Length: 93
Image (cartoon, rainbow, N blue to C red; front, side):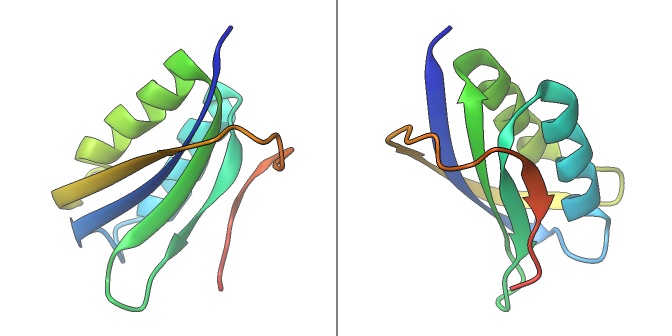
C-alpha cells in the first residue's frame, strides 16, 4: 500500500461538537497515526498518516464531521510521509 500524510485545517462550527473525539475514533478505526487538536481561532487541526485510501477516508469524514458540526471549509496539505507517528491522539496544546 502507498503511504500518505496530510495536514488538515477544518473551519466552521467544529469546536464544542465532539469533532476531536469523533475524528480520533475514525482515525483509530482506520488504523491511522497522527493527531487532532482545537486551535485558538475556532478551527480544528489534524494530521493523518497511513495507507493512502484510509487517509482519504479520514479526510472525507472531516468534510462533514460529527452530528452537530457545520464544516464551512477544509484545507488539506499533503506532506512527505516520514513515519514519525506511531499512534493517533488528541492534542490539547
